[in-house]
Length: 211
Image (cartoon, rainbow, N blue to C red; front, side, top):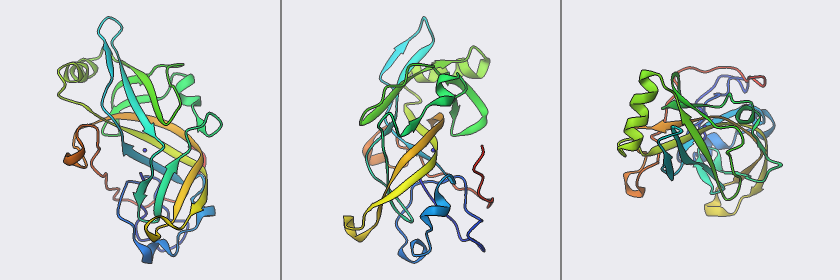
């Protein structure tokens, strides 16, 4: 769920899908943190699966870390404390496991009660018995699909530093896990499996605070 804004005619036309990217000082000068709160929906990659249980059709994944990710407006850090992470969708059994963040490619669900918080957030995914779910499950078992990526929305954030490489650093102090995905194309082949390729969003849309 990583962050990218595209050129906009008005401040209201902020993208709701954000992906990692290089810092752009010229564009970052117009970044409005108050407007961004509740509007930043992001997806970025994390680590590969940890465990697999064939009987229960589940696998353990890393979903997010507290390491800074570079975006066009600066670095973004996810606060991984319990008070900062909204897991309502997970606990209600409606946090989907997708392929490449495509809502039409559902292959499983994040298991309620399975998410463990810490410097790395981990959780368990149960795969669907549908043909597509079975196909993705087999690819995971065969280690064909090793990468994962989280989709999330930032509800609140603060500026914490302007010192790192002269690039501002922000912290998401309240954010919600929306979905998690298998990621087919590694963003950076130098760091191994689990680095998702940047997703481009063609359309601009106004801020939506109620998703």
